[in-house]
Image (cartoon, rainbow, N blue to C red):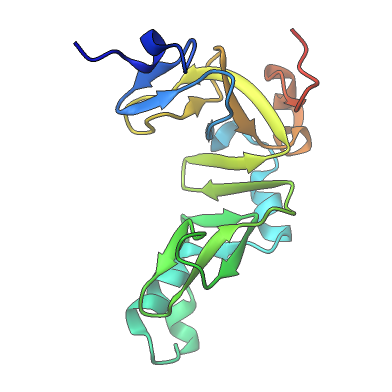
Length: 177
């Protein structure tokens, strides 16, 4: 009979979460309800964000240049923060075949996140939290709003505002137990 990674001893305390092995001591994506990130929209407006809705339009009409009215969207619902353009398909988190470019995590950014209408995924950060594993919609990721033992990337405390007190946010090596 085939042994699991836990039984083989190379992933102590790991869990198989909807097709993904997750080790509680290795950071994974933190999923936040946008209602709990008090200053999220201020951050989007003041940072160099990437509007993915506009990027999808640009990809659809390529190689033609867009008319200004084509990029005027009533309500965008998907943004990237903490990413930069790349020509490397291997490094890209989002890739556009027609334009032969994509977006990769900016290693110099304080955090990198995918912002959607009701939730955000922090996929890299200098800040961490612990939480429970998410629903099947986010396999191998941590629900920041549910207490637990799995390590995940977090928004910086200043973005969470008054809600920061609800989380035990820490920098690497500075976790309060």
